[in-house]
Image 1 (cartoon, rainbow, N blue to C red):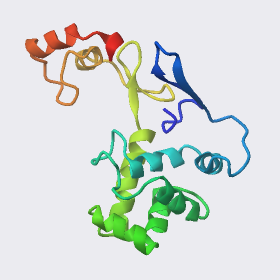
Image 2: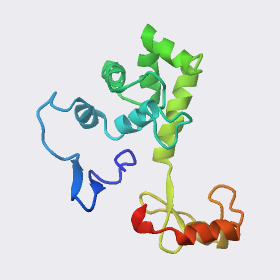
Image 3: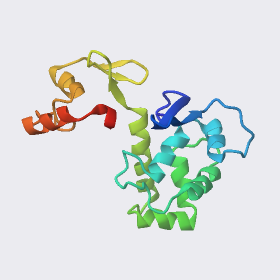
Length: 186
């Protein structure tokens, strides 16, 4: 949610029964250096979390781990080396200009700096261009602008009665299994 820029405060619940949760508040004042990733967020905004997701893995990366070989420390080294505006282009340039980081990129199938930039920008675009449904099945941007008015297919998609990618009707077997799920256990 932070990478989408929706809110600056989220609560992550690990266990309702044990009241185990974390609060992430991006408006909290901290000393510089206390939380290096947070420092970069204060300098560059949500793009830092989008690039972090691209490098370390998220729902939108082909590999679960993102770019294999890039962990927190290497990500921070690259991001901190960027001077000026941080974006996919400047991040990929900083990574490509570091021999060991360039080697990691090539081991992940990116043979040119432009391929690395395209990969990073692809993940950033998902976060920036995401649309959601409103309560009437209209497709809207995260700022509330209507992109497409509701159709029967969008209503079925929102209800979960069609395949999320192909929009083909789900089989009775799949629908039966879905109806048996206890949402409280998910």
